[in-house]
Structures are given as C-alpha cells and as structure tokens.
Image (cartoon, rainbow, N blue to C red; front, side, top):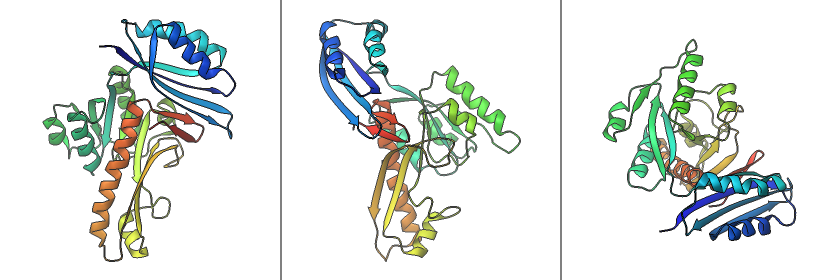
Length: 283
C-alpha cells in the first residue's frame, strides 16, 4: 500500500509553477493522484492542491525539507501533510445541539476525517451526549469578568492537544479579537444566512414575519469582524407560504448541519486555501 500525501500552496502567479511541482514529485519518485489549481486574476495569486503517493516509504519531514527550495523559489506559502492523518479538532457549543450531534455522528461513522479531542461548552447541557461518544467534555463558563480566563483555558487546550481546528457548532459567545488573531484560519463558525437582515433573538420567527422564501446557512472562518469572515460553504432550502415558524427552525437546523459538515470536511482534507477575504475551495 502506497503512502498518500497532500501538498497545498499559494503564491504569486507566474509561469513554471505547475512544472516545478510536478518535476519535484517525479524526481522524488512520487505519483500525482489528483491535482487542482486556480489562478486568481483579481489578486494575482495562484493556488494548488496536489494529492500524491509514494511507492517507497517516505518520511514527511524529508519531503518538506526537500520541497523547501521549490517553495522558496516561487515565494510559496505551502504545506505537505499525510493524507491519512485525521485532523485534531475541538468542537464548541452552547445551548443548541443539532450541529454538535451531527458532527459527532459523522465523525463516529468515518464520514469526517477528524479526531474530536474534546467538546468545550459554556453550559453543561450536552455533557451526557458527548460522554456517550467517549469524548472528553470541558465545561468552561463565560461571564464578562471571566472571558479572558476562559479564552486562555481554551488556548491552552488547543496547544496541549495539538489541535488544528476549532469548530463553533452553535457556540453563542463572541470571541475576542486577540483569540481570533491567534487562531486565524483555524476557527470555523456557522450562522443562518439571514444575517445581517434578521439579527438578535428568534431570527427564523423574524423571517417568517417577513415571508422569506429561502432558508439558508453560511459556514465561514472566524475573524475579528463578527460573522464577516471568509465564506467556505453555504446551503439553502426553498420554503413556501404555508410553513410555520417552528418548521422554519427545523429547516434551518438541517441546512446549518449540512453547510457546517461540508466546511469541516473540506478543511480537514486541506481543500480550502485563504485568498484574502475569500476562500479557494478545491471540493
């Protein structure tokens, strides 16, 4: 069985990038299984994801060391990872558990290539659910006075458990600008796509009052700008005039789960590259 790897890169767009990458893989005895690329004319940047295999056992650190010269010659931001590594993830939740339950189940059945190392919550509502999956549950209460300490505890968990991704699975606390910067590109959030049209309490009831015809959800990276980070995935469902507010809420739960699960999967498979305030998604 061959070893599988994923190379992702972004750099200023110019001639020779694909040739340099493919030549490097050929010289090192690797075989390209799948390759996707995109040149953004607006930003002048080039993005690439290559899934490749090696017949002979290869140390990933040696691959990284030998590729460094190629990366430097094109000013690349690049990463090489084993394709079979399950990304270490922390889930965060408050009082709404549909996204949490969905991600736990998908991980259990192997539909998500992640290892959920802990679930963090500012409430204890889902401690029993999380325990049933054999996953550590960390209760970190948050008040105005304890917010800094709570975020410090979260960061320590991320560092000690070598966590690559934090998922806000309906975690209803606003993160500080400092935390957002420290985990930039490593926190994914989900929200209903009515924002900013229907802010505040009961957005689906507000939408029902306005007679909306589409229910949506948006998964995005978290930045200091609340709910305005780079969008990863969106999902919508058409609804009719006969739908009740409670039915809208149910539809909303489903689309939130779908959008968030795809975003987490793509991130864990290293299919997402940041492009300023946007993303390139090689789905």
